[in-house]
Image (cartoon, rainbow, N blue to C red; front, side, top):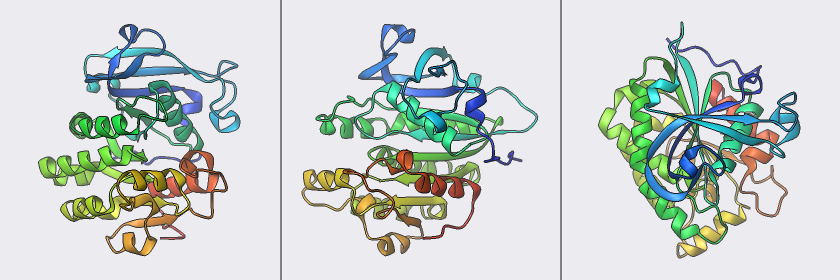
Length: 304
């Protein structure tokens, strides 16, 4: 039986460490910054330790990411080694970043998300080989698709681990594409065990072709009720992505009713963001973070 995630206390604030799974190539043996680069490699797992500007007296929720940094990455032989045995299984939050992310920025984003939604359990960042630059969108999309087998491998190891409770997934932007592909492969390979272990799946500003997404949802129909989509029709980044794709609509900018007909929970965050881009509302907007909290808690959505 899974331990119930308590959302009243941030576990990350007390113990600022993250589980790491990445198919980036290690830099400097993963012993010093920047730890992992944009090149593609085999899967590496470990644990990252973070340090606040004042050695951790304040939470990320109070300070944001400014000054926080990864101070150490301890590489482990196997993913199982990272999650010790406990009286009850530990719930896990897995964050998959979007395009234009360095390893460290992805890790800090995972930490901020975990801290601000006050997740009680382990938090993992899956970091795929993004160039971490604004003008390498094409490379990033190809790397994301290349990473689907690595993420499926991570899901498989987590499902097999009796020390892991519910597996909650939050994916952003292009990261939703690799996540959806991996879940599709995992569902075909594992079926019921995946359904039983998977908790909430939140796709924030998903940068996925709408037609591809519909066909994938049709193949993983039993998982649809677990999926929450956070959309914004005024997401400028998705507008550019759609233009690059030849005018094909992205899921994160799609009509809410069209997505709800697929059996998904949908939150239209168009009125929650007042910035220029409105692509990272899951980190920058407290109301959107509440959506993620409610999804993990299994609570009804006000706008679903």
